[in-house]
Image (tube, rainbow, N blue to C red; front, side, top):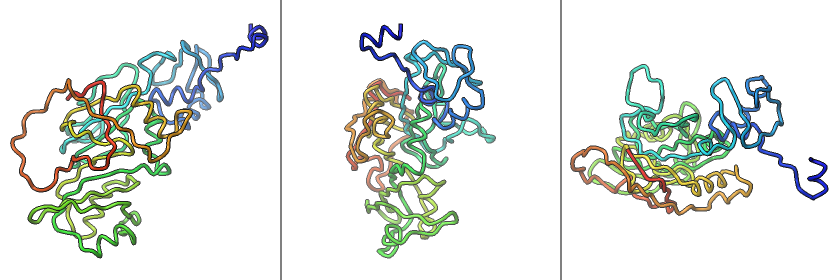
Length: 310
């Protein structure tokens, strides 16, 4: 049959590399999947998998964790946005039994949500989840230097010398120096002052620790952007919004997973569409203590065309 295909000029079907299929299904990064295959932890159609193997739609791939059928619709990469409130932990296993962000996410069959980065217990804002281990790795790995932007309210006001230090000289922390790629004064009232900061690393509590090293305790911290994905203004606390297939494809292309890699600075003009949302319980009126931290001034907006829900 292959000889006949060659005579007709038809390219034989090559399929997808096994490690890529596993990564996109949320098992882990491509490198980790290659290690699994080499260790004999993966089989295809009942036979041990080998490095370099390609799989076709309909093939049955089995690992120690679960089994997937290649090409099934529910194995495609999904991306979910969540507006995390303060008081939730980004973990599935907490000895203190605190509320977890995973409690609010839609249930999956044959896949799992992977958190892209973390937010502290007392930090709010944009948290991204995906079923693609490869996408999660691209967005989190330090070598990709994905931008993170935060709205920060501190007790006090930065001096000109401190602004110069965080932007040029760097602030020395116990795990090394840190500099901000951008810092904007957002104003404030009384003792509290808002700043908008951007950096390209995700060390633990790095924004809080930087301001504390300058003698400016952080009273509120909110992530408003991660890479090209902004926190949609209409996505209220405790709500989720899933990106549509086209939006997911653009994010995958931006990180270089798709065939044609997009420019690093290319904006994606998504709009949040939480029309089917169930709003969280009312929290009462908020005091006007400065600019809204979820104001979207950086341009790129993303939201879920599949609707948002609590």
